Amino acid sequence: MADDSKPTMAPEECSGCQKENMSESRRTLMRRLGWGAFFTTLTVSAAGTLRFFFPRVLFEPPTSFKIGTMKDYPSGSTDKYGVITVSEQFMEEQRVWIVREVDKVYAIFGKCTHLGCTPKWFPNERLFKCPCHGSQYYSNGVNFAGPAPRPMDRYIITKLADGRIVVDTSELFTVDKFDDPRCFLKA
Image (cartoon, rainbow, N blue to C red; front, top):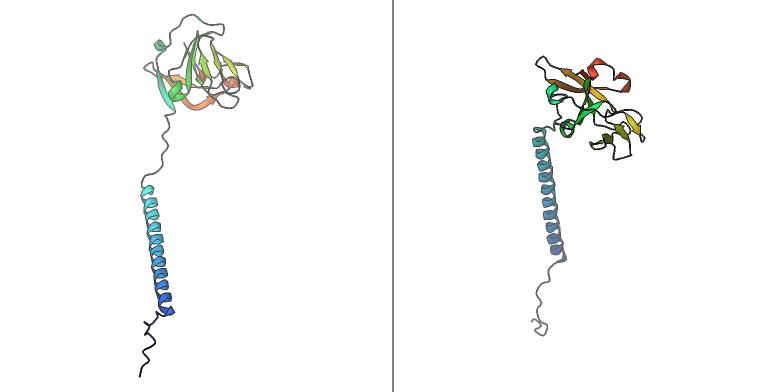
């Protein structure tokens, strides 16, 4: 006969069952991580493929541009360097000053010859001053103070058949080529 004095115990869960449940949750985790990595790779690849259809393009201003006619740069009284006016009209977009002297018009590249900073024009003082290292230039672009090694460079300037003036920024003239006929227009 069975001993009734001992209570019957529910069969204990086997330790192997807990290991199976634990390994099942590990499998689920690994499966989810695997699929997550797969879809992440797929998404990144698709984004790269879509980006390919939109190329990176750098829009630069044209190398030549029209600045008006000689009437836009009238003659008048000069300063002690022979300069009548310095036009800042194209400085913002093209980095060019148009300088009118008594007998010629030329285009100065708005870049300091020391380290490439952009000088500022001070019309009251009739000077260009570089804010970075203190270089100073007369109204005709010739350096006189600071570390700048030479005058500011100039661009090609030509006149079209209809009288309009064109500045071409594809070629720079340094001080030794300022007498080149392409460097200025006779007024």
